[in-house]
Length: 398
Ligand SMILES: Nc1ncnc2c1ncn2[C@@H]1O[C@H](COP(=O)(O)O)[C@@H](OP(=O)(O)O)[C@H]1O
Ligand SMILES: [Mg+2]
Ligand SMILES: [Mg+2]
Ligand SMILES: [Mg+2]
Image (cartoon, rainbow, N blue to C red):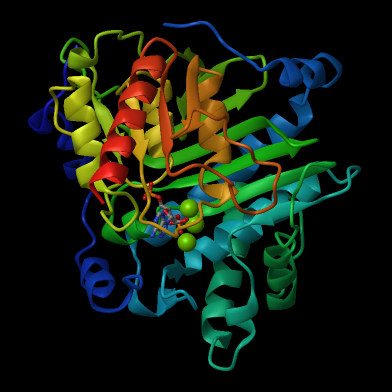
């Protein structure tokens, strides 16, 4: 099994580019600078007493609804749809609209349960002078999406309702109780470019991620990157979902039956391919490349925005995901929680650079050693060894 640039490029060319937003993005909005399942023993304790079926069904509905709003916005994005946050990262009407919709749908579906959510966005910038027009646009998008879906018989939400829904994502999370973890658009830069992004939703219960849903509206349904698995299916839009102890499934976002997915069974690194962030500012491409080279990986990296990387890996499109942020960057739980359970329930492993499992129980930040590495169970020991050796070499040469 191998992968090459020419084989994977169609994933980006399949999606119509949004020239206006490309301009916008460049001008204004850059940042500052076949395997068995493997639930952990503590997860098994939780899953034996909890089914989470109702919560998973609600999460799938919420993420699908939000994806519909995002698709609509991505097709016709205009300059006034985008803001720059205090850290100068981009946020769009779709990020806010998606967060409001997920919060609305979860609270509606699970009205008998206490609700707590740790989410990326908040309404502070929308409450400022001059943001009224944007807020009205978001409110209209949310109402139109709810109406077009036809699932909920509700009167029109006001701008105040939308602000409240966005702000129900202000929980701090932590090791006790249940908390939803939401990234309403993961890969906002990819979204603005017309490329990959994901709506990423997970549930934390007593410090463990027990379910996850990833809606990837632009990810091809057909597997890509494997020479032996060519497909003429050009359809895009995948919904991945996983529940602790129950495996990972993928279904077409537009509707269709779910199918169980598994990570690649590749054992020989020469036949493996690896994913990394599209954005060099998010992950050190040189470091990943030297690790992959030492490992013996022959194929060039496949660069994709967002947790769509975890989804693609969970179905075996590639075998390794390497993420090494620049020094000082602190990873957030919403950037990895859903992706992590989707890969682990498909038979893979996700750890930090020292081999520790990712701990989502410490609040909004992931407390980890250097980077994140994701692969199958066979390749992980060798990958960890190469990562350790590479880190030692860097430390001794500086
Ligand atoms: N300097 C940085 N280093 C690492 N990750 C960063 C970063 N700046 C932003 N990010 C995160 O990278 C995410 C996108 O991931 P990827 O690089 O895999 O596409 C962003 O999610 P959002 O788009 O939700 O803000 C953001 O949280
Ligand atoms: Mg994100
Ligand atoms: Mg986001
Ligand atoms: Mg963001």
